[in-house]
Image (cartoon, rainbow, N blue to C red; front, side):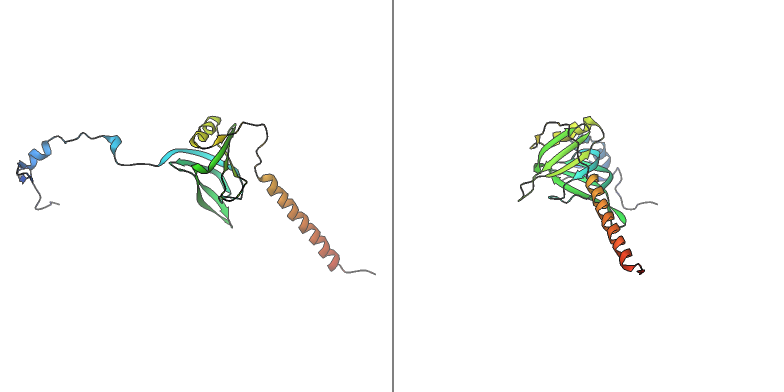
Length: 193
C-alpha cells in the first residue's frame, strides 16, 4: 500500500522566520535537546508496595473489610491503600480502602507484625489495625512511611487476631440452638401418662 501526497526528502519547507530547509536537511539535524529517559513525563504517586495479611481491625472508624489471604499494602504520597479479596455473601469480592497517612498516630512493630492506631473523628478511642508483613525487615521499613506516628515500644503481649471472638460467637450460637432444640423436643414429644 502506498501513501499518496506525502513529503519526500526533496521537498522544501519554509519556517516562520523565512529559513528554507529540505525535508532531508530537517531530519538530519540533531535534536535541540538531548533525550532524557528519566524526564518521560510519567509521575507515580506510589512510594512503596508490600505484600501483607490483615490480622485484626477494629470496627469503629474506617470500615475495613475482612480481607482474606494476601493483601497489597501500597504507600502513596498521602495515603496507605490496602487492597485484597474478602467474603461477601456467598462469593468473594475485591475491594480496597485508603487510610490517610496523617491519621496514623501510633505504630508498633513486633517481629513481622505491624500495628497501627488511627485517629477517629469525634471518638476518644483510636482504631487499631494489625498486619502480618512476612519479614521483620519489611515490617520495620513499613512504619517509616508514617512520619506523624509515635512509635510504641515492643511488648511481649500477643496480638489478638479476632478469631477468638469469632469462635466465642459460634459457641454462643451453637449453645442457643441446642437449648432451643431440647425445648422443641420436650414440647413436641408425645406425653405418656
